Length: 518
Ligand code: ADP
Ligand code: MG
Image (tube, rainbow, N blue to C red; front, top):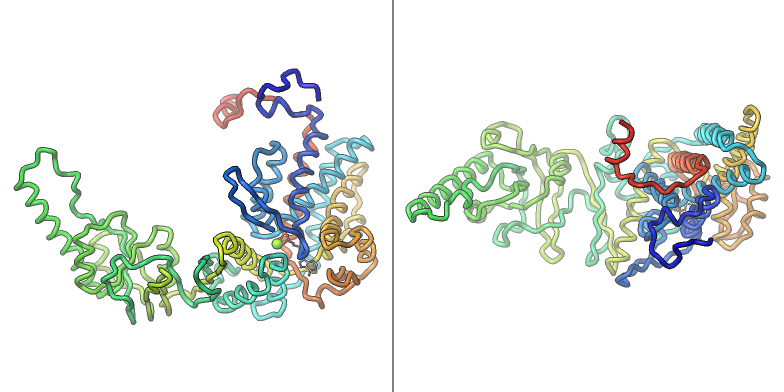
């Protein structure tokens, strides 16, 4: 550790131990250690504190990892896989990190202690991961919306979360309420059918319909509309721009422009209302005050919305976004909703009984911003877990499914030293149950041995420490979460184990690297 520049600030790359494997794997372990104790229902929380002394308590792997400051570049790769896992399946981030760390630790041992060449280890990992995924697929059972297993999946996924039990019921109610409306191209896509919003001043609720966190454009507009005929306006609602006036404009010019503005505004409003719309959702960037006043006078319910909101509002109500005055003449542009109204106390607008595809909004509460955020994340995790389970099936949870494929993975025959690489994968498969149980206060290794001797689908009851049937106990995980986590862990461990030197580079910005390539 003798550094000639001790005490002088140096860029990170120069401070890296050049014994790459050792240094990289240590960095990975440090990061993995920060999240591994959160795994499973008895996992503990982390208190995150930033420089401004803001704090946040979290049990969510990806949230914790993303908030870590200034970490080793290789450890950052771990953060990236956690992030990717979160994007692809929305759950199982800690699982992915724990397995990656185990693979790297075991791989390093093979390379350093037994002198196995890294490429052999890497090939072994690749075959092992593929094989394990196929075996897990064979173990998986299909489920449907009405199966009890769906509830169990959600409960398992939320078991380590703040208030998980209560959130599970909320998630289940939402899923069943949208049901097949969330089917797109033969698989469930709840992103399109369930909105999750967080509020600190409202109760947990599932609402059949859309809840917009917005207010009417003007408080003098009607508070509610029954049999609402909805127009989604994206047209230019600022017919005359002040910027057209020159500095030295004459009074007459200004006057004629003002006249023009009133006439054009009236034309636009007339054209919009000629469609018989009584509700206008406005996504135009600017709205002329004259237009707003006319809408108030004509008792229209108007709300500003963002361009992103158009998609689902249009799906729910059947309205088509209108871009030009000419488009207003088309038929079938209006959407419908049985009831639209503003809840002034809570500052939200409800849209119910839409003509289009059914949607549900889940309101997740929290007494503070912090708890509502953590509960909101958890609710989304639950929805994601359910989606993965419905689309790809479920396996026994608590690390049981992983543990029971080990023997079959070991039966795989690879040539030569690649066979040794399989050990890396089997250690990772074993590490999940071990970590969950260690976190629950057991001797993880001892319990894993007991579970190993039990039939497939069995694992350890986290409360009693006894061997139980995980299917009977209802501790289940989505197959997809497991296979994705395993693949992600395989990817990262392969890259880390292949590196034999970390080098300080001059400039690796995107441009510099592509220049060199050319
Ligand atoms: P991740 O970020 O990987 O989703 P979690 O903290 O959510 O991490 O833990 C998920 C793991 O906890 C899964 O392997 C799941 O099967 C396990 N688990 C959940 N509930 C139980 C339980 N009651 N007994 C044993 N394991 C459980
Ligand atoms: Mg989870």
